[in-house]
Figure 1 (cartoon, one colour):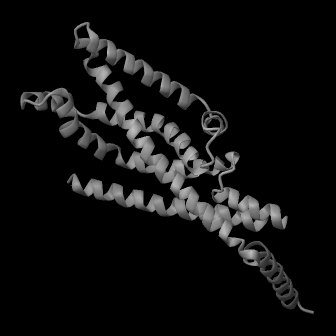
Figure 2: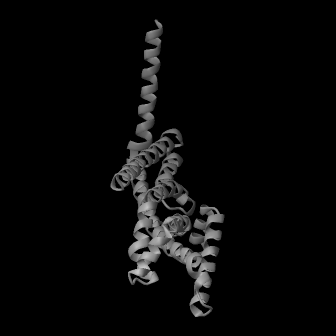
Figure 3: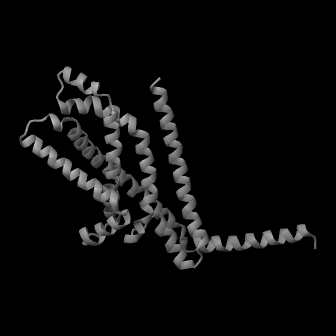
Length: 252
């Protein structure tokens, strides 16, 4: 028997083993549905979390940047007190949620705060969204602070109040500046949701673990999960790159 025939037989044997393993893990009992269901839950959690994070982050960023910009010029009174109080709450929020692991926050939300809830997807979305909001807030705050101070003065000279100037002039420019960073936060958030299984949410990673626990074959289920995450990240990274190029072209 030549070396070529030996190699051919080895390849055929490997292919037969791979085929049997593939059928066992994905075809029998429609086990592939664990991955598709998990993928759907992963995307739901990611999108809801991003929405919550952006809304919360924008609010915190406005409070923090407003305090840095105008608190020193305000006269003592209820307005300044409320702004200082809101800024203190926002700083505490940023410190706590950026300083503790997201998986611990997730378990606190599921097992303590919403212990009576059985909607794991919604609870996970809230946990990841509140955590993401702390990072989105700093992204937006850097975008707001990067806008030239003359923009605010120009808006005030046109008769806009502080709130109207922020809404119509400052925030649109800041949003455009931080859009690529927000897209990257979305990609990071997508990968962070892989720990949702800690609270029994059937996300993509949990789907792979369920298959592995049934078939006692860890390679293919976990490899399939990794490939799906990689494909998603590559796709969204391509979209982010396309978005960045379009933004650069629009500025010329």
